[in-house]
Image (cartoon, rainbow, N blue to C red; front, side, top):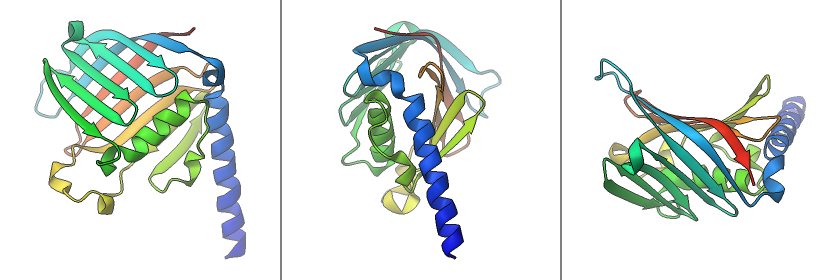
Length: 189
C-alpha cells in the first residue's frame, strides 16, 4: 500500500513538473495572440460547422476567443465566463458554478506560469504525448447540483511543451458532441 502511495506521489510530481515546463513562457508575458479555427461537431449535423477568428490572452486571467466575424465569443475574465453564440450572450461565474471552477483554476494557472499545483485537483488528469501536454478536466458530478443543466462533461486544453502555445481547447458536451478551438500562429508579446 505504501509503495502505491509513493508511486502516485512521484507520478503527480512528474505531471506538475511537465505542466510547469509547458507554462514557462507565461511567467514573463504581457499578452499573447493567435489565429483560431472553431469546429462544432454534433451527431445531429451532417457536416461540422467551421468558423475562424482570433484569440487574445492577457495576464493575470483573461482569455478572449472570437470567431464567426465576432458573432461567437468565449471570454474568461477573472472568475466570469461569457459565451456568445450567434450574438446571444450566456454568462456564469466559476465561484457559483462548480462545472467551471476547476476550468478557471487551470486556465489561470497556465496564464500565470503554472503557479497552482493542478496535479492535486481531483477532477484533472495530465498526459504528456511527444511535445504536447493534455490537461483534461472532468467536473465531478457530485459537485454539480443540477446535473440536467450541466452543459459540458469535459474540458481539454492541449499546450505545446516547447513553446507554451495553446494548441487546442475542447468543450465536450454531455451528448458527446464537442466544440474545438484550434490555435495557430500563436505569438507572445
